[in-house]
Amino acid sequence: MLKQYFSGRSAFAKNIIALVSATALAQVINFGFNILLARIYSPTDFGVLSVFLSLVSFAMVVSAGKYDIALVTAHNTDEAKGLTSLGLVITLITAICILFASWLVYTIPIGFYQQNEVRKWFYFIPVSLILLSGFQVLWMWNVREKRFKNISFIRPLEAFVNNGLCIFLKGYKAFGLLIGSLSGQFVSASIITVISLSKDGKGIFFNQIKTLKNLSLKYIHFPRVNILQGFLDTLQMGIVVLVGANYFSAAEIGFYSMCLRVLMAPTRLISLPLTHVFFAEASEQYREGKDIYPLVKRIAYQAGLWLMAIPIVLIIAGPWLFKIVFGAQWMEAGVYAAILSPWIFLDMIRAPISQVASIVGKQHKVLIISLVSNALLVISLVGGIWYGLNFKTILVLISASQSVVCVYLISVIFKMSHPQKI
Image: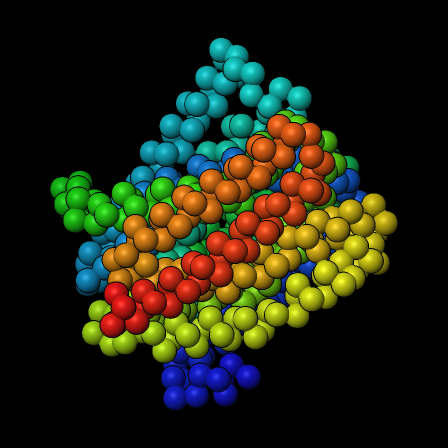
């Protein structure tokens, strides 16, 4: 299907096929293990892990200074190598700062998540940050070099290590999930480091301070706009967990976490590979002065075609499917999935084409829309808590408001990618 759809762009098609095939394998592994993990870990265990991962996600917004995005669009290879080094250096500095902040929380002490087990895990945040952010920077470098076949196997291996250890450590409850997650991250980061070293040497890891300073100033518009944009994107997916953990039960947060695990599987299966390949291809076409609108339209329509069955099935039979697949204790997660599926579906169409703003230098337009989107999300969440609404009703408000914003944002990206409308 991919080859037929991208006929005439054989290299592009092969790149997508390589990533999609490997990511599909990873998702099959994850989904298969999730069925088992859901029966040996409780919703509360998943709820604690989701709070930790949300905290790491917020730290990752600034961890590489968003220079991992800049390196893909850099004008030449030398600058891209320098930006890769810069991203890794900023990651290390950010991790050290978070390590110090964690020490302060324990030493003063600061009343932060006092009633949640995640409070014991703060020292693991900088560890996870280095592994995830370092991997992301090197992944984007290899995306720029279009080494999709070389790196595609990493995701399945990570999934196997992560989930396998979670099963082995089931007696440790939530901590077992944490160790499995960190181990998978370590394997991915180690492998992509070895691949990058073997093909590029130490040049992408080390650069003169003067070079890094000059590049940081030349590409300063990326952190100026994209850090705030990244924060807003992370806030959109993480605020429900971080704020909700203080007002709703750990089990409810666990249901929400499992719901997102299932809903985001198609994102990793289809949207994420399309995003990486699209970003590299569209950046190259734009640098060559070509019209990227046909590519944007093709990717968005194809993502919608592949994914449209998901919300239909979940709305009709979500709770029943979760009960059958994961066990009776997870039926409530199926209710959450049915509520959120329209929003997640539209967001999965938006995700592959979202980097158009960075490519054409119109990030501020998307930033404004994201500000409005997050304002609506916060109003729905905080307003719902203020008025004593239950968790499901709050999710309905969030899903409805975010769906409307997604439709509008997709239309803006389409216009932005068209030369006559930039």
